[in-house]
Image 1 (cartoon, helix red, strand yellow):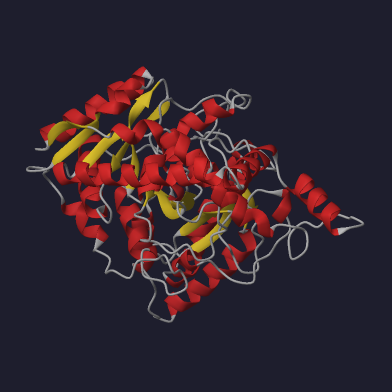
Image 2 (image 1 turned 90 degrees about the horizontal axis):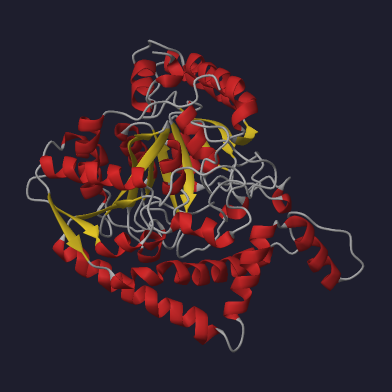
Amino acid sequence: MKLFERSAADLARAVREGKFSVSEVVEAHLSRLERMEPALSALVTPMREEARSRSAALDIALDRGEKTGPLTGVPVIVKDNFCTRGVRTTCSSRMLEEWVPPYDASVVRYLEEAGAILIGKANMDEFAMGSSTEHSAFFTTSNPWDPQRVPGGSSGGSAAACAAGYAPLTFGSDTGGSIRQPAAFCGVYGFKPTYGMVSRYGLVPFACSLDQIGPFSRSLEDLLLAMEVVARPDERDGTCSRRPRPAFLSALETESLKGKKIGLVKEFSAYEIDGAIDATLKDVADLLRSAGAEIVDVSLPTMKHALACYYIIAPAEASSNLARFDGVRYGLSAQAEGLLELYFRTRRLGFGPEVKRRLLTGTYVLSSGYYDAYYNRALKVVSILKDEFERAFSEVDLLLTPTTPTLPFKKGENMGDPIKMYMSDLFTLPANMAGLPALSLNGGYSGGLPVGVQLMGPRFGEMEIFGAAAVIEKRLGLPRIAGGDL
């Protein structure tokens, strides 16, 4: 097995045992990156020299017998809305094209303390607004299973990089499905934790009540190892939970689901779903049933309003969060004769079409006379949806759903139809609105393309999800690495 094909857990063990140096591991992944990147376009900023310098320092520490962390020698890539001290953080936007943060996001700091080596910043939809990575201001990332198709979004670069072997662990942010939808499109694990499980400090915000950081991986063990590193209380994030975290890796020991109830959402049957996804969902349900779980139907009647409410709440919060990009303090600043002209010109040049669309929508729903009619009403619907989820999880342990209604679509296919693009997040965004944990995993392949399914749990129900995922992985095996040599 080539080094870039190995799991993070395997690489960390091999480095600790002296089978490979950190530098050997990093060079193998950088070589894979160099060979694949012209076609895949997954990274905005490769960090070759930084990675080589850090790997050399870790090799010296290992030679001295110094204590190292659980991810020592493991290459990692983060989405380009994670702040990285001394390395530009663009959010794939002209607005922040040259911005270099003076501090690290908490997740970045935790990863480096654990011995991981950051080798790049991944491409994304601008300011995390999109479902295909076609809204990056710089370039479109390709799906490693079919370069004519999108990798999903907004964390498409992170998902594609993980699937193609750039790094065994990558990270993204999920506001309405931006980890799970590209995970499904690229055939890897993608996890959105419970809101507050992982610190958001240093994540450039899109919608603060919805955003959450999570990992991509090609094995469940790697995903759980990542969660053990990054899921911790953080005083710098007031929304980060102080409750003790479980021993995530212990979920790998799950052998049976006897006594568990897993729900299928009745309302989802009303939507048009690709036949391959529907068939895969039924196969996974049968697999879970064979492992001892009882499969039952549950009802979430307010779910039909979730998409509309999301596209009120998320743009509203975005309009507030992105107000800071005014050309005065940092980021792009256009030449102008007056303050108002400075605002207009900076935002016209700095923001792309999708960001402008959502900012206009968000400003409208927050404006006088429309706040109660749109924004406040959407919040009331979310409150009802949360109550429905709570009732559902009093009856079942988990929900099993499709991750997406379609397989990866072709580049440009949905660019002229924003509503069709928004429908990509139909099954993922409810978890964000209710603050629930949800995992997309690969359930199989159709016509050479991966097919994702989603497990959703109650708040802080991560271990229920991971236990079921462990049973599925034991029966289906690990997802395949994508891309060959493209």
